[in-house]
Length: 262
Image (cartoon, rainbow, N blue to C red):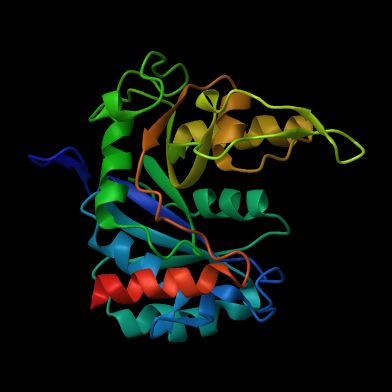
């Protein structure tokens, strides 16, 4: 169902899976942070709008608790009047369970999935399209390591996954059991990563199955693909794709959203 545009992204080839199952305990919003109002609309709505506007996205799966689906639909989805079809999947006990449910709910005909945190409202359509395009080899020279290539995904794809992020700029410290510094690693070897993280659907299914057999829980979806032997590209993207995690994140996120929309 995909066709090439003159740009780097494959039109409508990817399905977004937006994880919105977090309870918001660290943010002090235990009712679910995705529906808290930020810059005039629910936090989740900003991400939905960006994926709706991305040329590479043909469908969106929202992953949220079963008892909040109607509320999510009424408050954060339907008021937007999105052009992209939206469906829902039930969140699991962990983020890994939730994203796996979202990938399982990707409709037939979509071979690529872009997994995103619903609490990252500053993502842009341009970043989404660049990440999807990079999976096919477009703009791969902008990543941290363009020497690997796909080992699971097959010849259609340049990589087994693409992760948005940036080189670390702060000095990093390894801390020992007593809280004292054990080492200062070379920060040029480290990146901080964000979402979206883009993969062939078949690769993610292999990675989830391997993790389940081993009882492994990763901190992001890319770690599951890495563990399964896949080669994942780090794509350098803007640093302002912030996640709302703790209360002090919100004033900056709100200011950036208002600046963009104003």
